[in-house]
Length: 355
Image (tube, rainbow, N blue to C red; front, side):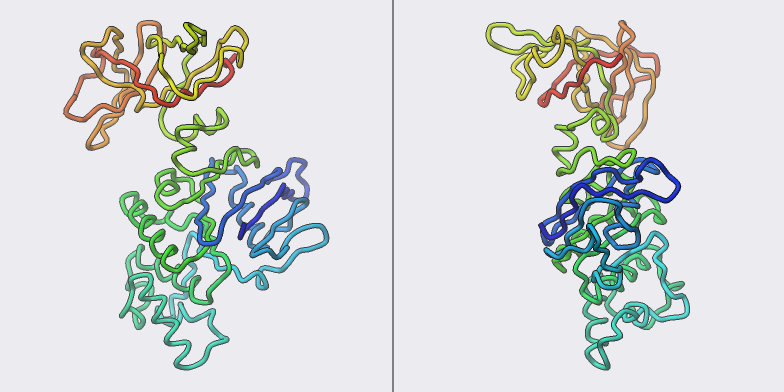
């Protein structure tokens, strides 16, 4: 692995509980990793520890096969050849774009420095903007300047801390896609912190979900969504609910009984012996529930959220069980209306029954 974090702990003075607890993750060269989780979960502390801005209390960090943090070892930030992009961009307002980008290129002189500045500005789509000032640029353009400045010295690793949080929602996801293309074109290994799932999905090759200092899962976006390894990940990623269910064997096949009916012919389903009496909770995503007027199961619309091409309906069964469903927006039903629904579950995700 190009970046290898192993059993990392970070403890702040005066606190008994570590801010980062036993985290292990790896990134291959050229990959983009994303850390996501609720506020205070430890993701920024982990990023700062990789940068060398926080000392670890246990565990190791290897960068390009070099030990930079471990027992008796703490390579200072300036010696790690790491670029950073901050939440507020930290651009110098009195400097032109070219001078901002060239700020970290003191080792280059004259035409070599100018050529490198032009090269990274072209890479981020700002060719011809070298004589402008930050206040003359849009928020998205300022973010690109900050990215160009971080890329200019050709760092071993790029760290980005909530880089899109100051931008409006529509721009965030689009810019995340564009930044991914820029980083891939530069063949840069990067680790990014965000609280926005769509950002994480748009930019990350590997995504880590953190809570209370623990890394619950480090995986690609598809696996996080469809095969969450913990109940927290299942609840944090995407839209869905947990419903009580029972696993049984019938004719050599595993059958899952749910409030929406019996599920059969399902892949990757655990055996009934995995839980006492086969009783468990099943994760039902909004995209597992299909609106079908002819379905025998009826549910009442309790809430609806318009998403453009679809509604996100929150529905309640006669039993009181709540489920969620993505429904095409031309099915504009009223609050309180009863509609037919049926399950279409490809990936069965179960957890021990909640008490």
